[in-house]
Structure formats: structure tokens, C-alpha cells
Length: 385
Image 1 (cartoon, one colour):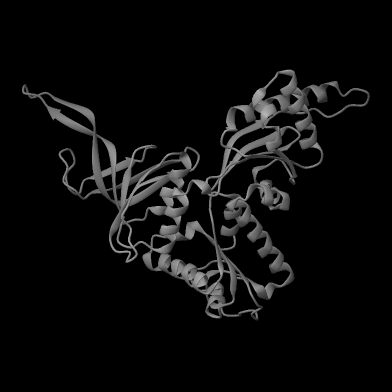
Image 2 (tube, helix red, strand yellow):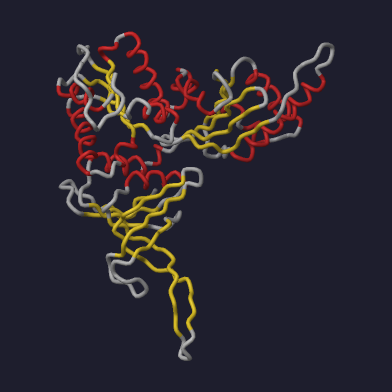
């Protein structure tokens, strides 16, 4: 989003920031900024009743600006819509003080957010969201015979844009005609999906991932058709296509493709960096388990010993409603940074974040081994090693 007015100062007292969400992903960033108890001021519609001079009662929708004390935050990840419910805390001609209202934040309309405490995680999120260089510019087509997923990979999330499914009959002895025709229909559908859902003015790299030779055959078809149809969009952007291996055509197999060094060098993605960190953690867990910890209590003990080299933490943990628990995670992040460690905050809408959440949402790669801790985990963290 665009930062219109940023009044957050270093003493982190109750101050405010005004933002304009410019695209769907900005709603995800806003969702991560909002917490119960915050104050949100935004334009919204309210249904009001009017009484005429004759005594007849009617109703109409009016646009007004309300300031709510946030109680409930609802994010629809598919539509990237954000609804915030709370009580009105500022005098308004249409809405009484203390009355409930739900604001649906709109693109290109400013809102003002005020907090009692601006911690480092929130400030970093605002900086990331307002920095144009942070925007993702990578699309991916993950495919296998008969199945393709067209996704946009952003630093914050993996957005499914289209799913193509075509039944491909098996090859028969002496006749491949049906198989080949179905395969051509499938490739044509994927090509149309790319043209419809990928904006080449923004996207700098398109990963085409598949097991075996499906990707090679598809790219061959794509380029032949582009020449035959004189499709300038595909011909001009041909260098942006990159072939990588994936284990299947499902969205989740994209994680392995993002790990490839060639992709890391070409795309410079934050998302790729997180995937690489998770891959390194799993390798460490397998080969040197005394240098790979997960679960909050174990990771905190490693941090006390100043042993954390890379902290992997899910953004889901910072949405915890309990202030003390959330502060504990923020303190962990600040402490690791102060000790010279690297912090990777994973998006729970990204495939790598979903995997990290299965490991309690917090893990660490250590600088040096620490003997296995036999103390039981406390209530705030789940899976134990």
C-alpha cells in the first residue's frame, strides 16, 4: 500500500499510520497489521432509517467515515477481502457511540490505523508493504499430464489464479491419436490460462514446472502456437519462461521448484529465501539434529544461549489474541536480531508457511550444537521434538 501519513515515532506510543491499499495483496498485509483493540478509521456504508414529515419510515445507505475499536477481523484469502467488526468510538451523525458496525476495507480508499503499541514486527510489515521493490514479479505454471495450476508467487502468498484439468486417455497399441488430441487440448487450455491470468508488464519470470518432459513438450507447443498465431505477448516475453523440475502438477510441489539455485539467482524472491531456509532446516534436522530446534520453549532456550543463526517463524503467531503471548514472539524476534541472527517471517498463505505451521510455527537453525533438551514443552508451543 501507499503510505500517506506515517506518524509512528520511535517511542512507539499511541500514534497512527494512514495507508491506501492499492492491490489485493495489500489486504493480506493489513490483516497482519490489525489486532483486537486497535482503532481503525475508514470510509464505509451504513443503512440508516429516515422518517418523513408524514410519518412514513424509509431506509437508505449512506457513505460515512467511522472509527471503530476492533473486535473481530475476518480475511477471505481467495477473494482477498478484509472485514473488520467493532464498536464505534467517535461521535457520528448516523451511528451512535458504542454501536456495532462492520467495515469492509476497499482498494484505493485510505484508512487510518492507531495502536497502543507499535512493535518491531508491525513496523517491519509496514516497511515491507510500502516498499515497491518488495512486490513479487513471478508467476508459475505447475503441471503434469492433464493437470495444471497457474499461480502468482508473491513475497507474502502463493495465489492460485487458474486450475486446468483435462482427461488424457492412455496411449493404445498402434494408435496414439486420441491421446495426442487430448494433450493438445490440454496445452491449448493452459496457454489461454497464461494469457488470461499473467500480466507480463509486471511479471519478470514465469516458472514452468513439471515431472519428466511435460514442461519441455508444453513450451515447444507454446512457442509453435505463438509463431503460428503471431501472438506478440508470448513472443516478446519468451526469455521470461524458465523450466524447472517439480514432483507433480499440484500447487504444493512448487516448494521444491523455488529451491532450485537457478531460480533463486534469477528471481531474488523473499519467498524463495524462506523456502531455502526451510529446506536447510530439514537437512539440518536429518544430519545434525542438535543444531535444528522447533517448538517455542526449545527455541527460546537456544536463544538464551545466543545459539540461533536463523530463526524461522510464522506470521500466524503474531496474530495471537493474547497480548502477552504475542509479545513473547516479538521479544524472541528482537533478541535474535540483537544477537546477530537472521529472522525469516513466513507467510501462512505461502506453501512454505503452511509447512512451518506443522512444526508449531517456530523453528531455528543453530550456530553450534546444543545437547537434546529433555524438558517437556510448555503450553504455548505444540509439537515437541
